[in-house]
Amino acid sequence: MTESRVANFGAGPSALPESVLTEAAQGLLNFNNTGIGIAEISHRSKEFGAYIKDFEEIIREQLDVPSTHSILFVQGGGTGQFSAVVLNLLARHRLLHPDLPYDQRIMDYVVTGSWSKAAADEARRLSAGKAMLNIAADARGHSADGKSFDNIPPHSAYKFSADPALIYYCENETVNGVQFAHEDGAPTAFPFHLLPKNTLLPLVADYSSSFMSRPIPRLADHAIVYAGAQKNVGPAGLTILIVRNDCIVDVDAAARLGAVPVPIGMAYAPYAKNDSMPNTPPVLAVYISGLVMKRNQELGGVAYYEAVNRRKQEKVYEVVKEGEAKGVLRGKVKEGSGSWMNIVFGVVGDGAEGRFLAGAEKKGMKGLKGHRSVGGIRVSLYNAVTEEQTDELVAYIKEFIAEEAAKPAAVPAVET
Ligand SMILES: Cc1ncc(COP(=O)(O)O)c(C=O)c1O
Image (cartoon, rainbow, N blue to C red; front, side):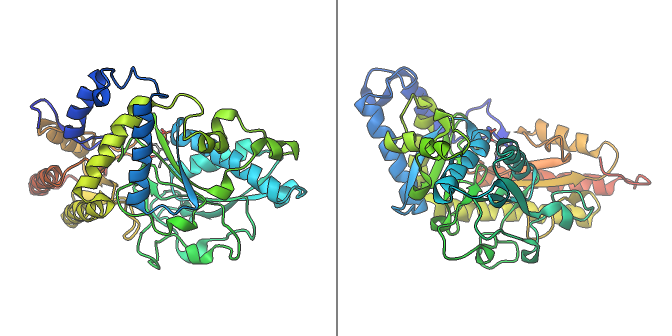
């Protein structure tokens, strides 16, 4: 590793493979032997056109995306999609059911953390007077203290509508460290079996912080899966969408029937018609993300990352348990609901969190401070965080536990 680089456990933007960065530095000067750098070349050039096509093909192959779905590259991040999914799917619903009164045009939201809550808030804001929100489940009602996002709710908690305009969930809650299990039928898996039947479901999943870290369960049953690139795939600026073709609709025809008008940069159809380039795409972010995906493919693709990521998270959860047993650490998420990508825990004792972070920093491990709304520590284990770096972190946590456990107990011990 380049001498000055550290182990980056940050939640995003986050670590990228060093070999990709070295290659990208070359591309900045000369993209694919064109003599023009990637940040300077026209997105209409045949070289960039071929590159973005290849990138799309790798994603399709890696995730086994069916031909019923298009892959789109847009800008605006996850937050842009909080709005875009609502506007495009309300337009679709209007075309399907032009005359429904607003209180029968329902959007189902599953709220398991701060990102799905933010998405639900945006849906409420955009749809005022045009549609109603149904919170199909809210994890806070099932938490230890009645107000924290520390769990995936039990299947008995979900109340889906009969024919909603959209059904929304966030697969991995980056801030809270809560993730749906991906084994079909697990008590904390997404309850696909409870969804309404006999219809092309408008099921939307935010995969921003788990995209490409393991396969997507029941991908073909989704209307839209989207992800900002800046965790597992590349730099910020690129958002990747997998959209079922019946959800790419004529938003102007829907607006004529009374749907909320869709800003042109947020409508899916122009992206689908123009190979994701109705306007200038984020060329540099597409390039670096493409390099990451090519490397992934050489390593064995999403199956390879699933195996490595499984081991990485097992090791960290195990050491957190050891710390809990010794009264030094405290897990913040219920068993079975813990994320593979973002592991959050508290450090018990006066000033202990500061000592933990300072000790990690000394060893060249950064980005471990938890989100301000949750506190404590957050370890993000995205694809580019290596198993060796994870092992070094685990060794450090073990050392820390031993040191803290040897101290005379401060009374009363409180979590910082
Ligand atoms: C799960 C999830 N959804 C949405 C967002 C918002 O993404 P952006 O910052 O790209 O708007 C984030 C950001 O970290 C996220 O982790």
